[in-house]
Length: 287
Image (tube, rainbow, N blue to C red):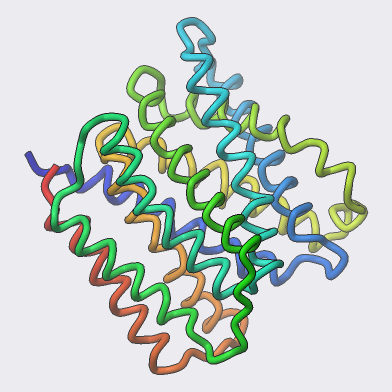
């Protein structure tokens, strides 16, 4: 049975919104620490989702799978500091490639171990094609820092995202996408609150700090993860994580258009491979 197009598009559009985070952070005040930005992003997104859910009267706390919800919130809370710490240790290229590239493979492994559902050959081929494209996209020729601690942090970020996807994919089968995203991110925001006190947060009151925080929280978190949760109602977790590789593609294109970055021929080849893998997963793979 083929996966319907609409849920796949929900996941793809979510990844596109995630891809705006790097560009948005480029416009944040210089004093804003990346981990503090990540904590503020989750806090704003969680509060916004909870407010919308309450205003619409959609929050029903009966019958919640508490264990799965706490684990999903913990995974999402872990992703932010793990990813930004990995990038700090190993550099943007290595940290991003390992974190984003490992997530689809780890998701496929988790899905096979937990649900005994093995991804098909098309998924493996498309995922490997996309990961190779991701590597080429970030192959800038700069000095590469290979630090074991940074590699482990990046793998932890990939595992956190894969775990969140798998867990929320189960929760959303019994709850609405809005409820699922609101509760998980509300709890995740609470988990990350200590980071708001560890860093100087005065930047958040500046006009650019307010704009960046609202964009990251409302657009790149609340809206994006609502769409992602909606897509997870019908898209397998392994496929959803692979489709999320549209994030670095979006980030690269926005970097060229809005920030004035230049891409090499290898980077453009990487974009083409990324798109090829995404198309294979979205329009060829069978459920």
